[in-house]
Length: 273
Image 1 (tube, rainbow, N blue to C red):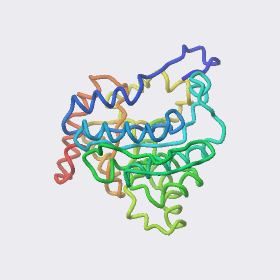
Image 2 (cartoon, rainbow, N blue to C red):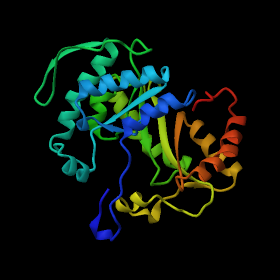
Image 3 (spheres, rainbow, N blue to C red):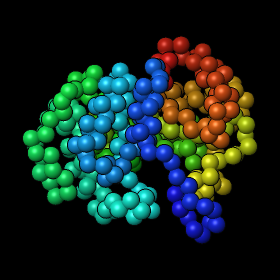
């Protein structure tokens, strides 16, 4: 992440799929995934193979988050093409979803090809890990909503309170209806930021992307934060991804009683989530 005008040094992250493979081996309950993998960073058939492999290592705990990408600085530095991102995504999505669901595909496109391609061996789930799309763009939704099981909305650097959810999800539900799908058949997930300390100590790279003056992480007492989490569930959100503010071990430990409080009102909730 780079913004020379800010006067702050560039920031980066470890490579996602290397970390996911380590987490798959080192954990046993939590679901794992990407928010989200830009399909143009890797050959799509190879990405499907990687996903099936990590699903095997984790015993079926991977959620494959996919998107078209956005951070042009990364594309430029690593030499990835930034043009026709949605067209490229459409072809990549065809290959990835076809390989994971059917185990084989024969495809020739303008940007990608996978001729007589097969996934062998297969991971623990016959249809592969579920695909989650992270987009609100009309064209991306039209491409993916006919088949993807999971959608993800992003509120981490915006208002992470339940009242922000209806406006976030409305165009997605509308797009479901446009492609002939009942919105209730799509799993709705949301990424929020939670700030138990209330000090707004955002990660450095966020300042290189956005004006954070209007950012509202979910804050307050453990009971108040737990009530906010339950407020998303009451609106049909089945899965929350929590970004701890600041992203430190101390914040994660502070989240423990909050999650326990939230679960007391929802005892049947999957403990891995």
